Amino acid sequence: MSGKQLKAGVIGLGLLGSQYLQLFSRRPEIQVVGVCDVRQAAAAAAAAQHKSTAYTDAAALFKEQRLDLVVVATPARLHLAPTLAAIDAGVPVILQEKPLATELSQAATIFDRVEQHGTRLFVNFANRAMPYDLATHYLLQEGLIGAPVYAESRLDDNISVPTRLWGERSREFAAGSSPAHFLLSHVVDLMHWYFAPARVVEVF
Image (tube, rainbow, N blue to C red; front, side):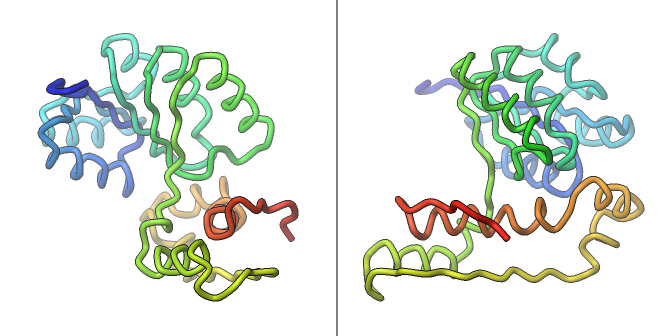
């Protein structure tokens, strides 16, 4: 891959999808060739800003573009279809926002399809990049506070997140998710990361 410019696509152009576009625009080794959102105006605006092609349907994006990387940043309940479409289109690397899915059957379907195609799929748990989480991971993994035998975690959020974070679409998005998907997924991931190789076996 040395010297090759990676061709990327971004599906879902809300808060997180827009952040990926800004990041990619600062990386000369990445060229965003397609952006996709069910809102035609949002797709057109992003395409104009980043000199790429606008799509309102992920299938059309994969049909017309041969991608090295795709980001799936749709609302959590809408991860399945674009992720499977990317896998079936042969996109080698998929970066998906957490959680993997909002239903166990959908997560299993994605997992099985990844195994079949050999796709490299990464789920972005952004808390791992937070300074205090990096410090906690270091303390535990280096044994600086001894051998842990028990952990309990609480993650709070402001009510403005489900009611106002996504503007007029906030209530619709929140109705398709839950604190388990939006917050608890971070907690379980952090417990796995902090205490590896130990595994979380029960969640209450």
